[in-house]
Image 1 (cartoon, rainbow, N blue to C red):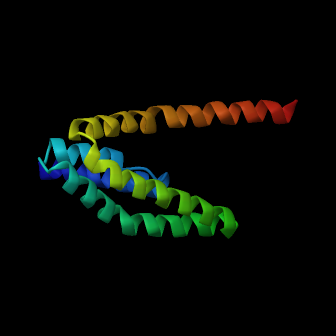
Image 2 (cartoon, rainbow, N blue to C red):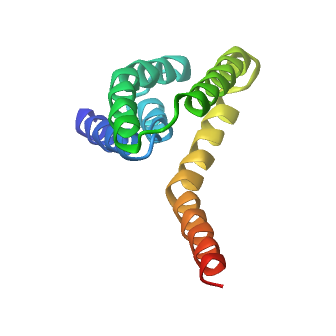
Length: 129
């Protein structure tokens, strides 16, 4: 069991570093395999990805040289969404939250890269015409 959780945490950490996602992979493993209650699994993931996410964000921002104003607006909106999500967690049934995480995992792993490729091809066609 510890090997499955460790391997999933490593994969999720890699995804956090590369793309900014990953918690949707680890929470189902912590609840389903390790038997943690949903609240503890979410809290453990949030705490575990806090430092890796901050470091990854620093590296990506330094490499991309983004202007501070849009990044700050994005951070404030994401923080508001996270606060709203955390506040409504007690109102939702655990199975609904876990189901949403599984759907989020499928969307994040399969459809987001596909969407990226489609959008990239559409913009590439527009720039050549």
